[in-house]
Length: 298
Image 1 (cartoon, rainbow, N blue to C red):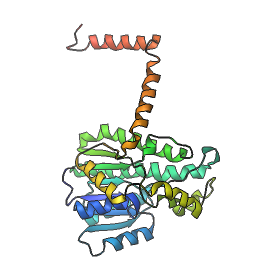
Image 2: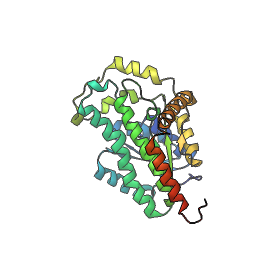
Image 3: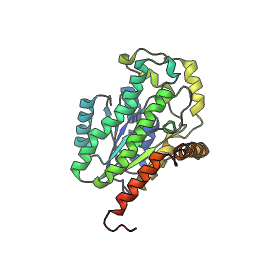
Image 4: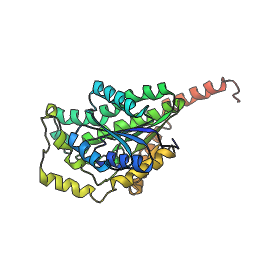
């Protein structure tokens, strides 16, 4: 999507944080029509107060993205207001940290439902519509550097982000035939309010082995991210990646050395079996299959 102006974007979690940064950039700088969907009415109200009086096309929708029927209704509303959605930004996410041994099923279910099923619901809602309207499009999935790095206390969050990374890489190989691009944005630290995500945790996920609305905990978590990207600056990085049809959007080069080490460890683990009898057998099978293929030599 090299031309964004006049097209429609649907952004989950758009009332605050990384998603609001994307909304500001896409509406104010790229000239897109933007739908911001969020579970919190107060966040939508604050966001719309920001956009009021600005020459932008922004429409709020209150949405629990774990509710598939409500998601379909939100998509219908977006299309009624602005027309077909060409850019889906699966950005909404929640986090809560602590040892896996202390976790409850509710701790797992909350993060999995929002961070994984919410992204799945977005894709399953909009991909058929994008294919159907025949105008192409783009899907941006916001994961995290936790899709690459496992740290103590991040087990549940890390699991969710590895999962959507796998989804994004799968979409990357399937969507081009439909003229739909895919990008995976993996933030590290971003100066947002995600550290207070537990304040929006529904009662149905009420049993936790971790913290609740604890200001001391919030202060410690905030200290980790407050030196990170400004959400609008990160939104500009995301916009540039979309316009370049760039899959990996990883604006955190400080993680590169650690990633090299993990990649080398994986390759070494594979190569331990280079002389295994079954490795040799499979190689022979591939060679024989290749020799019978049309045009093969040898």
